[in-house]
Length: 210
Image 1 (cartoon, rainbow, N blue to C red):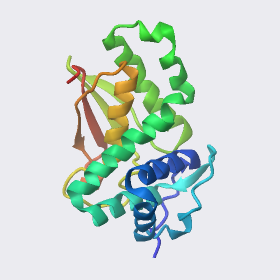
Image 2 (cartoon, rainbow, N blue to C red; image 1 turned 135 degrees about the vertical axis):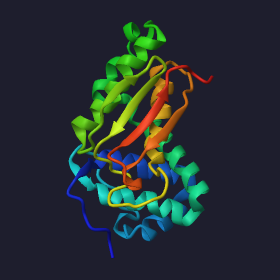
Image 3 (cartoon, rainbow, N blue to C red; image 1 turned 90 degrees about the horizontal axis):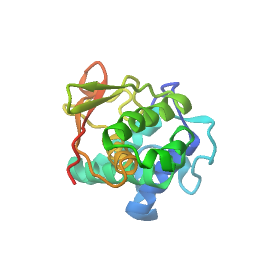
Image 4 (tube, rainbow, N blue to C red; image 1 turned 180 degrees about the horizontal axis):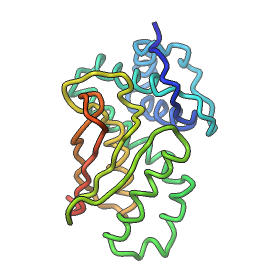
C-alpha cells in the first residue's frame, strides 16, 4: 500500500533531481528496486516532470529514504543518501533562483564568514519559497550555524531512534562547498522529528575541515 499522503509537497523538479541522482549512484536497476520497495513503482521510467509545480508529496520522498535503508542497511543507506544529497545540489540547485547571485564575482571576493552568512540563508530560502519545507537559519555561539527543518520532507510520519535525514545533510555539505568556493565543512544532525523532537536541526561548523 502506498504511504498515506501528507498534503505537503516538493516541486516535481526537486524530486526528479534526487531520483536522477540516485540512478547515477546505484544504476537503473538499483533505482527501480528502490522505487518498487517504496511503493512508487509508477515512477519507474516515468520520473516527475521537470517543472516547479508542487507535485511530489513529502510522504513519497520519505518512502524513498526508508527504502534506501531497507535495501542497503542503515550504514549503506546513509552513505547513499548523503551522496544523493550532494549530487542533488551539484546537479541542479546551485543554479537556482536566489542562489544565482552567490555565483557572481562580487560574492566570490567576500570573506568566508560573509559567504556563509549570505549563502546558507539563501539555500534555506529556495526550499521555503519553492516547496512546503520550512527551514530557518541562525547562529549559535561564534563557531556554529544552525539550519532547521520545522516541516521536513525526509521523515514524514517516520519513527526512528536516531536522526535519519541524510539527504539534507549531503545537500548542505555540497551547498557549503559551493558557497565557500571549495571548502568542506562538518555538518551534524543534532535533532530529528522522526526521533520525536520538535524539529530537525543541522549544526554547521563555521571552520572548514579542508
